[in-house]
Image (cartoon, rainbow, N blue to C red; front, top):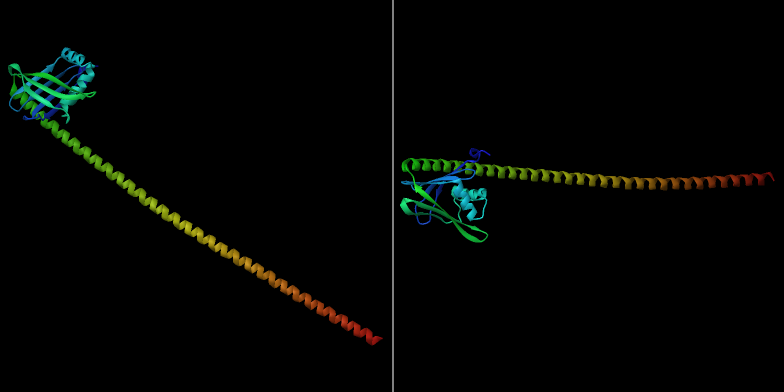
Length: 235
C-alpha cells in the first residue's frame, strides 16, 4: 500500500496536569509519525523515523501497526485515564509522555521533541489547525447529537403510533366481540322463541285433534242411538 494512502492528521489541545495546556499536531503514516508541539510561544517537533518506531515497538513486544495505533489514540484524543507530561530535557528539548494500562500494568511512553527552527510558523499552524479541528469536532458532535435526537424522536413517534394503532385495534376487536355476543344472544332468543312457538303449535294441534276426536265420538254415538231407536220403532 502506498504510504500516502495511510496518512492521517490529528490536532489536540492537550491538558497537562499542573501546567498550561499545549497543542499537539500529529501526522501518522504507515510505519512512522511526525509531531509538532507548541505552548503558544515556542514550538518543538518530533519526527519519528521508521527505524525508531520499529525499535520502540519491539521494546514493548508489539507490531508496528499496533504501536502506531495506540500512539495516535493517545496523542490524537486526550484519554481521561492517562497522565500526560511535557517536561524539560537537555538542549532546549522537551519530553512528551503519557501513561496507560496494559494487562493491569501501568506503562509510560516518552518521545523527545526538539526545538523547531521556525517557532512562529509552527505555532500558528498548530494552533490554527487545532482550532479548526476542534470546531469540526464540535460540529460533528452537534450533528451526532442532533442525529441521536432525531432518531429518538423517530423511535418515540413510531412507538406512539404503534401504541395508538394497538389501542384502536383492541377497541375494534372489543366492538366486534360485543357485536358477535349480541348476535349470538339474539340468535339464542330467536331459537328459544321458535321452540316455544313450535311447542305451542304442537300443543294447539294436539288440542284440536283431541276435540275433533271427541266430536267424532259424539257423532258416532248419536248415530248409533238414532239407529237403535229406528230399529226399535220398526219392531
